[in-house]
Amino acid sequence: MGVELTLLHALYILCLLTIITFFIFRKDTTIICIIFIFLLALTATSSIPLAVSGIFQSFIYAITELLPTILIISIIVSMSNLLVHTGINDTMISPFTKMIRTPTLAYWIIGLLMMTISFFFWPSPAVALMGAILLPVAVRVGLPPIGVAIAMNLFGHGIALSGDFVIQGAPKLTADAAGLPVSSVVSASVPLVIVMGVVTTSVAFFFLRKEFHTGLSLQDSSSATEPSKTIILLSPHIKKWLAICIPIVYIIDILCMIQFKLQGSDATALIGGTTVIMIIIIALIAYKGNGLNKTTDYFIEGLQFGFKIFGPVIPIAALFYLGDSGFVKIIGDYLPKGSHGIINDLGIALSQTVPLNQYVSAGTLTIVGVITGLDGSGFSGISLAGSIANLFGTALGHGTATLTALGQIAAIWTGGGTLIPWALIPAAAICKVDPFELARRNFLPVIIGLIVTTIVAMFIL
Image 1 (cartoon, rainbow, N blue to C red):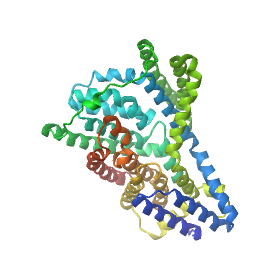
Image 2: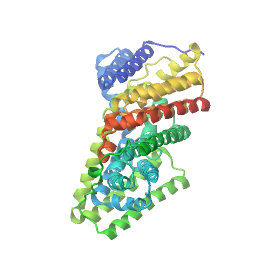
Image 3: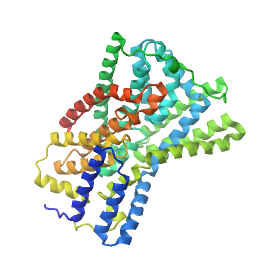
Image 4: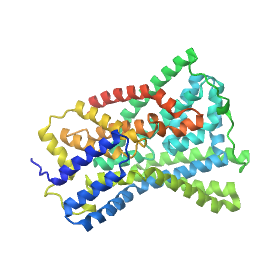
């Protein structure tokens, strides 16, 4: 069945190519996205006033779609800041320090602990939660600060963030752009996240272990072993009690998700509501009479962080929502009769003209993901990966979820905090190592991981 392509479709292709070019040259795409939103609206409506208002309407639509994700991340950050300031994080992590007896154990325990905490608190807050207490312990048993940074970075900003199974911020962005349910992208990403994680962390450990033997990683760690300084707000007994209760509460949440089959926004709402209640309780216990004011302060800090992270994402997300079902809701019914959305139309046309296969599709999505991650965000470009995955999946007739997950993994491993130096700052700062050195150490393991994961995706498709 043929599909009618119009000037809107050609303009959208130009838009995709322009954004990819800007990503390659590490230029910000916000203004470009706004320009193309205006041009798409102008082309569709032939009205400058409607095109101008289309910019604002697209932002409203994008914010409405992303607000649950922004809010849950903001609340989680509020919680992590509160745990750090009250010293509860030290108490929660301290039992694991007794298990760290060798550099090998230090690498894997810190990594797995970082991954687990990052699933619930996101990597940047998780670094602050555990870095200060585990770094001195790891250094004492022979794992250098750069090794601690690599472990926290690959397991947190790599594995946990690229899967994002609990908070589901990344899958939400890519799934929306690909026109898929979040749950399908999460399911498709599981085997790819496992392969990427196992390969990358194992290769990184192998290189790091070789340097243990040659002594190349040894460096002065005296400045990195300073103890965490927190104002004493809670007695040791209360901190211990809260440190036990907090994980139990989240475990109960997980059991509720399984029992009541909660997924996507429902699961996020449960985690978010639980976290809000815990913030209030802990703030009132820690700050007593000033707890009301401090609770508000922590919420403000979290919201500032959330909108700072998603500020650059909103314009590009708005643009890619126009490529799918958002076009009619934002601009109006201006697409050709029988159209399934700009991206779907292009996918159908592509399938009828270009002999695509799973090898070309998987390789292209990995490259696109890496390119979109070059801005150091990881999130600003994953909508593009989802959009192109939809394009190729429609052309192939299957595999959209797998391609979407692959693009998401490539983008976040590149820009979310394992290869781009300015995205590595949280882990590098905590461990007092050079972010450029950390990026250099991560480069080969991550590239090897991406190659292996892409090959696996080809066979899954």
